[in-house]
Image (cartoon, one colour):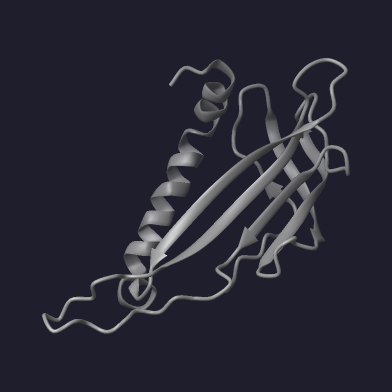
Length: 154
């Protein structure tokens, strides 16, 4: 199965939010190798949060490599001297206001996943484990991450 968000998505816990949900609508990705959705409506308690608009975007975009790299041939010693990498990106854009009466600015969250060519077939389990741990860390500490982004305290 491919990366396909279904609507609504349940947001992670954040200080001051109660049961946040996000209604999705399909959108065209600016990258031909991407899938994008816009957040068209909000659920739960998220005081002050805005759904997607032209002036204040709220988008999630998944992008795969334009050209997949494959593993090269080993040298005389049996080693592959340079292993190419396939880079995937998950990008969230959200309009935020920097000060009163100011236009929205784009906050960007980018998760970049660089998979060494060949690992997708030779070591799929460890790729899945890395992603599982990464997502689990974000899930476990979502409110703490949000608090750190606001306070600057790690």
